Structure formats: C-alpha cells, structure tokens
Figure (cartoon, rainbow, N blue to C red):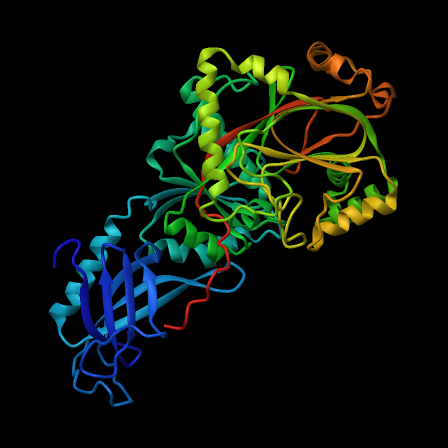
Length: 534
C-alpha cells in the first residue's frame, strides 16, 4: 500500500462483520456493518475516527478467546489489533475508549498495524517528554491522587515520558522553571488549580524573556512567546482557566487533549506600576467587589473553600464604591464586540482575524505612526465604581457557565473591560445574578463594557506611591476629563484581584500581549457529538 492509498478490508468488530476503511489523505478511519460478502457502502451506523484522535495502536493477544455467537467460528486463530482512542461524552468531556479489530490472517493484521502506526508517527505535534508539576495542597488536596489514577496511566499508554516535581511550597514551580533546562521538554503540565497554573505561566514567560534578553519591567516591551505549551490537569477549587478553554473540569479530558497534541494560543496581560512588573493575568483583573473578596478571604484561610462564599456575602452587604479614572485604548483591530453573543470556540474565526489585523497595525509602527494614533484614540471614564473588571477570557466556571464576559476571546489580543458604576444594592444583585443565567449582564444603565488593548487605572487617593502614574495620567489625559465632576471627590482605595492574587498597588497599567502562550487545548467545541458505541 502506498503512503496515500486507502486501505480497505472486511474485519470483525465485536463479533460483527464490518467493512473497515483507512483513508490516509483525509486521515480518517471508518468502519460499518457489512452483513454480506461484499464490503458495501457505509450506512447511517458508520463510525468515523480521525487519526489525530487515536492515542495508540497495539497488537492484541486473542489466545484462548472463543466466540459464543458462532458468527466467526471459521477464524480458528484470529489475529487482532486494538485502537485506543478518544470518545466524546456529554458536556465537552472526552473519554478513553478502545476498539478491537479481528483479522483472519496474520499478514493482514500486521498490514493494518503498520499503516496506522505510520500515520500516527507523522503527527509531530504530539508531546513525547513532559515536565509535570503537582500541587498536593490545592483544592481538596487530591492533586497527586488525581494524577496517579487518571492521568499517569494514559501518558504511559501514549508512550509519553515524564519528570514529576511535587511542589512543597508556594512559587516552587515558578522558581524551578528559571533554573532547570526546559529545552529537553515538549511541554509543561501543571496539576492543581488556577494558582498552580499561574505559577507555571509566570515561570515560563519569565524564563523565555530572560533567555531573549527582554526586560519584563518595561510596560512597552514586546514579549517573546514561549515555544512550550502548558497543559492543565484540573485539581483546584474553581479551575476557571481549564473550564474556559476546554469546557469542563475533568482530568481525563485534559490529559487526552495533551496526548493528542492540541494547541490553543492565549492572550496574556502584563500588569505594571511605575515601570515595575507586578504580575501577568490570563483571566480576571478585578478592582472593587472582586478585589475586596480576595482581600477579605485571605484572612480566613482557616475556613477552607467556604471562605469565598462568606467573603462574597460580606463584601456584597458592605456595598463599597471607589472613585478613580480609567483610561483605555480601544481594540479597533478586533472583529467582534463584548455584546455580540459570539463566544470563543474551537478554531475561532474572531481570534484568527483579529491577530492578522493586529499584526498589520504593528507593521505600521515601523513608520513611526503608532504613538500619535494611541494618544488620539485613548478614552477616559471617571467616576465612582462598585467594580472594575478586565477579562481576557469568559472566566466561566461551573457556578457561572457563561462567565463574566461570555463573548470574550482567548486569542484576539484584547481584554473586555467591564465598569460597574455606583448603583443600589438591589441593582448590583440583579447584575450578579445574571452571571448564572442566559440574560445579558451588560444590559444595565450602570454597566459599561469595552474591548481594549491597554488600559490604566488611577485611584482617587492622595498616596505617594501612586505619584508616578498620576503625573503621567495628568499629562496625557487630564484635559479630556476635566469637565467630569465625578473626578473631584475623594474615596478610599480597594485592591486588585489578579487571577486570585492581591496586587500591592491600586494604580496600574495593563497591556494585552496577543497569543503569548499556548495551551494543550483546542477551545470549547461547538455542539460536541456523542460518538455511537463502537
């Protein structure tokens, strides 16, 4: 058989005579019931399996097995091979499945084995050697157990070798990535929650910039993408990043995405204060309501996971609002909007087109036009806010299946900036409730949402540590908001919640770096089909 020639035979699957077809050009394996001597045409019950979703193929020992149905008694010593593959289940879950094909002759069995293994060998995007960080304390403390029971056997099946580091303290994963030789790995896997992912993210980005000689403390620095992908095995309390990129918090599903070598580019926001990098963010930057929740919950770690509910209720009842100025650069390169009800899905057109348009804009900067355009396009909003949220993704989770911004895109080079102005406690409750249903949470007079490339926030407070940003803000944006009375009051300061971590400064500069990192994921699939039983 030639490299691109289809292979077709009559084999037995679950004691049924089936026509089996392998199409190398389409990278597709199909089989369907064929009761007669001829192969026949595929019917409605035909099963299709992309080669890219086959985990491995191995020869099967059929010694001692007998058929009770009598349908294939002529095959006195059947030869068989088993295809281990992905099977789609409900709610975006993937399951490990296997299909055994029986042949009457040994050469035919070896022909199929060789053809399938040859096609699998051409899938160069699959990882062969991974570095795995396991957080044994995150969530309910089940990270090590989840990895050993659900993930490690699948990696072994797929012939993936691993080096495992079980972390013993905070920031160990981040520090390790600065020290070890990461060039020998095909990817980094983190087993834990969003905090563990953030550690790996910071370590990988920081190590990449260090190797490239890029100063991360410069807000305008062009960061270099890392060639390594990050895999997330969810074992935390919310696992927002995993849920927003895969559609489920299921360890087996995430492991299978890693095995088949999926790749999903994702935006990362850098957060600076006075030309000092504070943190990177991929999900939520929240000031006011969400910042107060994380600040209060840090004092109640002894309560366990219930501390988030307790702090959330306490923060809602206190109903604090904060005064400040938000300045932002609209993301005019994007082809979508926060309210277009077009969520980010696998193979997202918005992300592809937005990245292309952003690259075209960046080429214009070579002619010295970028700075002039930015000053003209910056917009300013002043006032008192209950919350200021910036999301690079939907921030969906099991409690809020659509997230804080349902139409936010993972790789379009922008962030959705959500401003919740001062309102009654009842109206704010109505806004929060809409995160759990299908109604538009932005359809309120006190809520504004913008898709932005960069933004700054200046807190209305007389603190020396805010002076640098404040002076720059006056120089660039002062005349634009001088007519707004809301800027003239004084108010206390909140804190920024950056992906679950508190920031030390309330006044910040944020810039979105388009598709800076890649995950072992493919995005949430639209209307996943449930495969028929094989």
